[in-house]
Length: 283
Image (cartoon, rainbow, N blue to C red; front, side):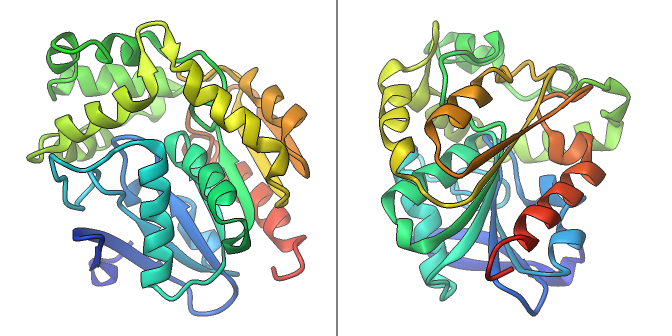
């Protein structure tokens, strides 16, 4: 992704980094996961931009966007942030793609503003079921989390090793790139605020899970859910919750795959995404 694509805009007083790729086709907004950034889509954007105008943003508190200490980092607030970004870019309606926290935010956007969401491409949505990795559960404890998530090269590699089934895909450059962002001022505090808005020591907050499960049947947009069978962060059985409760949902489970199918199996993910998006009436 070329540096010339770099741009910033103001969303609710937050300096927000985004990039746009492609100049034809319907709009597609990419929403990354917790403590991630636009860069985590770099193996997908070239394919997606062949048929869509792709808009990728760094969420507030993430990447190179601002990280205000007093921001409301709850799911509903973050979903409204994504919708505000769409409005600022003049996107009345768009396809949404997200992974992990970003996939959950896509679901929330579809529930909050169904008229603005054309379809949902979801990779391992967070907080649709109770279970998550012990690292995140421990980090939800005030004081302990500040110690455990202090950015370090060892900690970053350990977390990335847990995210991939094939650990050979965790390169030194990947570790360094994510460590650089994690060390930015305010990044750790924003991560913990997001995490603690949805997680406690036993797993995801029951109220957060009940909220989305009660709203899933009303989300009628065509949806493709992709999950790695060996996902250590969010067990693939959570996909069955979506298959059961989310109308117009197709579930694809990837074998030999961890928490990041769009990276670990990017060719398959890109092909499945192209078929799914191409099957829709507006492309």
